[in-house]
Amino acid sequence: MRIDLRSFDAALVRNGGPLFTRNEGTDQSPVLPVPSSNQIIHVVYARQNEKDSPYGDANNTPGFGFVSSTQSASPQLADVLALLPAGALPLVSVQVPSTAVTTSSAGVVVKDIAPFTAMNGGAVPFRTLTEMSAWTTPRLGQQADVLADTDVSSNGVWRWDGAKWVNAVGDTGWITLAWAPNWSDFNPGYPALAYRKKNGSTVLSAMGKTSAGSGVGTLICTLPAGFRIGRQEVRATIGSGGACGLEIFPDGSVKAGPGGVYATWTSLGGISWIAEK
Image (tube, rainbow, N blue to C red; front, top):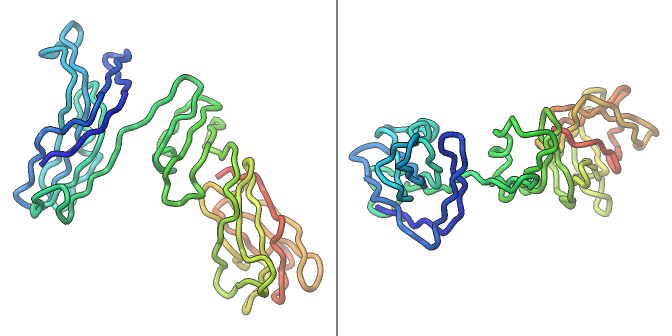
């Protein structure tokens, strides 16, 4: 079987220096074998051959190639990437079961895996937050742009602060959040539990009540990665019986603070912090 390869511009690296190449139209990959048993992963790559020293390739022709895993019940992409020749840019992975006939057969999984780049000073695009998080050596202030994470709250521009990625700019809008067990929205007409990130800060909106447990340490809700505080802190709020406190944790959890909260209703409205994790 073969797969179509769309047009692209690529920056490759050979012997420490840049090489630029282009695919000007849709082309096809080499023939990718179907395994006789179990599954196999192929990685199709682009590569600019260089005949002159110190490269030593057979010609100066650009082209496509592929490397493959061994046939097994659970082949690993990382093992295949380790087989790429020098200067090869991985474009797509193709997982193929022994039952496949075409690329549309059941069990065939095709994924774009080409890394992105940007001009000096530009935001480097990434498909997902996981892809971006794997880059742990950017320069201070480097920006990244997450484009298509399935968790839409992770999409947008991020900045490297020297130790971690932090959301840089933008506004996610309000995103619905689930209450912890026994907690629920106070009443129709009052704000339902939601969160948003605007200009790097996470903000909560909610009026909540609980049917069981409101003492210190009671879990109220948990924020996802990318919206979490950098260190444990307490925030003041108000409930049916007066002032009370919330404790915010780096694991994303929001809990009843010292003295507890109020079971009849407790407000989370306006509680905010800098999103650092």
